[in-house]
Length: 246
Image (cartoon, rainbow, N blue to C red; front, side, top):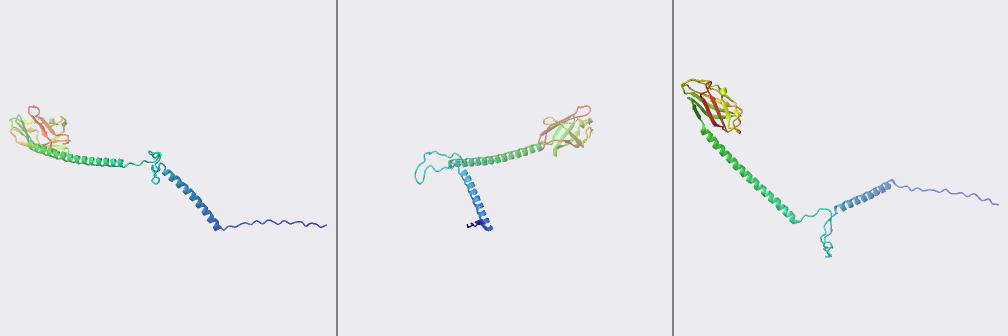
């Protein structure tokens, strides 16, 4: 009896395919490029489709000469095209407005020039009238009072005055009782320099100044002053509407 020899199984040999690292890297790069290209194309298509929404085909086919069914078809979305008539009307309106503004500006400049010339002429006339109004002389009970001129010093008015007693009696003044008012009746403060308080009969002429304080020539056109002797108050010196130089 023959004994069968035990069979020997051959081990299976697994063969592993080795890929070159350079080839593997190339394949990965190609795959990444394909994915990126696909994504880029999809995004570009999406935005292109969004930008073309509302754009329609022409109503009339230029090649087949076939008219569409909807002759009044208009885009449902997107911006409408402005007609040439509307553009011309808008340009004409803007041009008309520009010409009107230019003419208005020219008229305003001309009117300002006329107003300026008129103001200068009035000022010149006022200056001439004012210069011709001095000196201003008044007399009462033998006292001669004269306003020789008026000058502007900052916000003060300076009156150059002269005072003489031509009567036979002595006259005395207290200048704290000097009243000066503007053309609106407001009381103004003043300082007197160069004038004595007592005047002898048939005496000499004294020259001095009356300085009116805090007066703006833009708000005051004329001033008036009143002075009575002391203590009898029989002699009254009153000068009204003294013109203020500007």
